[in-house]
Image (cartoon, rainbow, N blue to C red; front, side, top):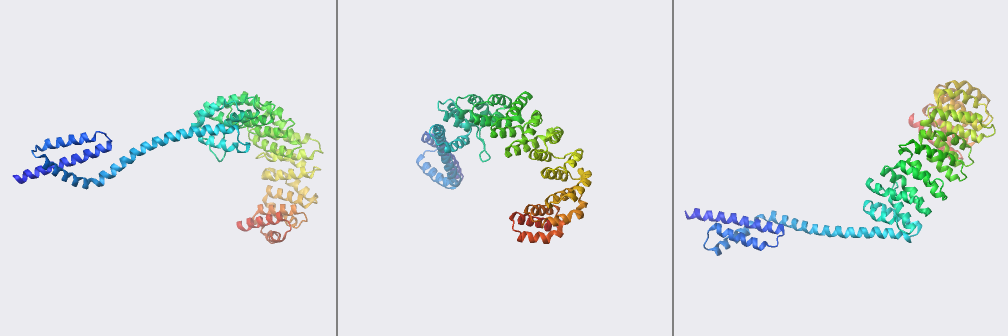
Length: 490
């Protein structure tokens, strides 16, 4: 009986010890300041449960049991306790760190904004990038700085609000752009040229984010007559970028009308910018096609190249109209204006899938007095391939008349592209062109043989000799490339 009584008492002591250990642990975890009172309350409950008259002995027994239990549970309790302490400290540190970081971030934003007042122009881009990479948190201070009396600050902040590049993503959200948009629109009317130019530069990105393309183009059109050239350039460019986003035809029509008038401006850079912008308007640019074609006669070769690219972009939505316009303009042009007529044909060549109906007109050009015109017509017929099959007799006829090996190889190449079965007929011409004294003719012949590929394997010995010994570097490179293609495919 005594044994059972002692065993029951030990079990009660063990259970109470477990309860006491967990209570101490929980009080420590909870971080309660009155933990001592809780422990004392636990002891009193413990004594009452035992109904014991000798609390000292029980206390000693309980202490022993608590020690054993604590050792047994230390693998669980101590790591949890340490984690809790670290967590609490971490929360305090994070809170402190966040507060400090927030304070530091605000101070950094304001310091960056103020640095626009005296920073060197070449270093301004670094500040712009830093502000743009902060993103949304910087918006309130940057919008406030849009009202700064210093135009350098206003211009710098406007650029930072809309800055984007392939290297840096723009970190502002769509809801930010909605807030930013009115400030940029207001900057378009700023008294300072640099502020207006900065607003024009970034408006397209911000307007897209705020879904305000039509409204933005309406404001930008008002700046097309700005006295500052840089403002004009950037307004034109932004309108071009926004053109695909326009919902209302009125804005596109108005922009194209203004651009068409600007194609005759004396400033070549402005003309070039306008041409590039018109290429973004697609079918809406139809009223400007005639003026663009006339601009192929521009004295500036760079502008002529821009026009060719622009017409190529517009051809997908204005194909038939553009083909007819180019051909009609060609035959209406003066015979002596060979450069202009060549540019017209160069633009025609950039239109994909030319119809076979233009073959007769191209055939008539084969007899033109200008070698530039004849050569371009021959190239276009070759590009048309089987669609120009009816031109084969005319090409064979002019091939017999030509003396220059360079032109003969161009005609032979056009015949081969129209009908591959003609290779045996024209192959000797390519072999002869490889031995021509003119380096451009040798290079052209080597490139043609590389295009033909394995069927041109009989040219390998001569190409090998040219690749090693030709005095012209371009010829050696063309011969080497042709050999690589012929032998690899073979």
